[in-house]
Length: 353
Image (tube, rainbow, N blue to C red; front, side, top):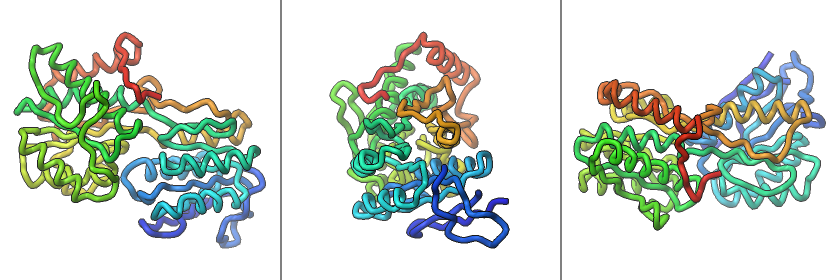
């Protein structure tokens, strides 16, 4: 039997109880289950649990681990920078054998606690921490973003597409590298001159909002790109990306590519008409795999790297905008996917995991 309770952003804890050794008992019990003897604690970054990104997808993966592997999972939600280190300490103090942290903001606290607690297992999502008991969970999103860039160039009617990020950090710029390379590949194949605004791969610099939470900044930046003719935009900025979807909806004739999760499912339904696809990170499968490794004693610090080959990254269906994608273009994208999987086409990036 499992019990699950979901709370929105700002809640102190999100608890999901089912029945890794030495864990504290579940916070509540109705008397029908014995105290849990296996558990995992997850600490979110300051984006909160319902970030429509990798906090949310990591939590969904741990909820799957409850159902499939019988662990008790609890998410400790950070609402600001000052919460981060105390929340990791709280996770460690829970007695659980596995601590999952999410994002670069938690790298320092994760490393510190891992060094102080060598008998515990840690996993950090979307960041790399070098320690014997920390498994990085990272994704070669340039592979899937390459497909999204090729798609963007193929559907663009203006010959201008764009991308922007929340901050100039490897997990962000990896998307942007793949995207502009995909546009370049389309131009090479078709003899076109589609322009990609917002990112210079050679200089590793481009357009950034400076945070991952202020939706208005994303909207303003997207509007600037639209004014320059962009009709497909890839925001790599967490919640800030919602500003781009709002701008696309208001302006018309503009589509957006979401990141991390399928925006068609995770964003408000009003934005579905402008969502071309999403560059996906399959964090859910990674969480289930890691919990299983802790249970069977095979856990190591070898990174989990999501790729097209193992299904860790992918692009989402085209949903309502499928009519923009010709069978010929879709076939070309599938051919590129298979070439990447086979190693015949290598997508390079200085930020590759």
